[in-house]
Amino acid sequence: MTGRRFHILSLLVVVFGLIVFFSDLSHISYVRAFVSAINRVVAPVVRFKERTVSELREELGAYIHRVDVAKENIQLKRRLSSLLLTEKELDTCLAEIEQLEKTMKVSSGFRKLDYVVSRIVYYDPTGFDLFVIIEGGKNKGIKEGDLVVTERSVIGFVESVFSSTSRVITPFNEKFSTTAVLGTRKKRYIYRGGFPEGSLLHVNLEDRVEVGEEVYLVELKRKIPPFLIGKVSEVSRGKDPFFKEVKVKPEAVPREEDYVFVIRRSR
Image (cartoon, rainbow, N blue to C red):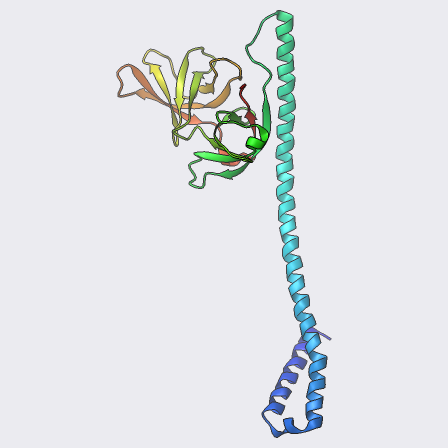
């Protein structure tokens, strides 16, 4: 029976029932028996059709959801594979450095990094990228002050640690500050976070600084290799008569990252 014929038949049954109900025919016993029989036949069919339509809608919704999730999982797996490859390359580089140190009997000051791969699970809803929430906290040994990076650039420092997540402040955050250098130079400055640009502090008037120069995070104890914070975007004569005003545009865009490295500092 086609859908159109079924609806026509259902409509006729309803109309017939109304006629019987509002007329004296409903008092006749065999008419009542006939109507009852019709209801017993049609009602299960109607219920079956409604149940079938409902189940089909649920199955279709679940299928669409599974397809979307599958696509997202494929993208995340590709990103994770890329990070794992970078992790292997990093281990290879560190091994080569250690071998070179032994051969030349020198020390670079860098020890083997203690790190974990983590996933960003929440972004700053204001759009200013002041912080992110990463997967892993006390359960993974993450502590306040741990450095969070991508393959090359700085995402931020761990500010707060919870049981299974951690809050990370980014170079856009005014609470973020660290020692930094310009390119390969040895002189150290202080980078202070800000949105949309941070600042490089204590830059003397005689220091040569050019727009586009890279600014790297460095540790005083040299236990962690330099990671890129950003690039100089503006250099001007500041209000202070002894220092330049240097603006730095952070390199990393936290909301475009899925997975990060958490470098656990030595305790």
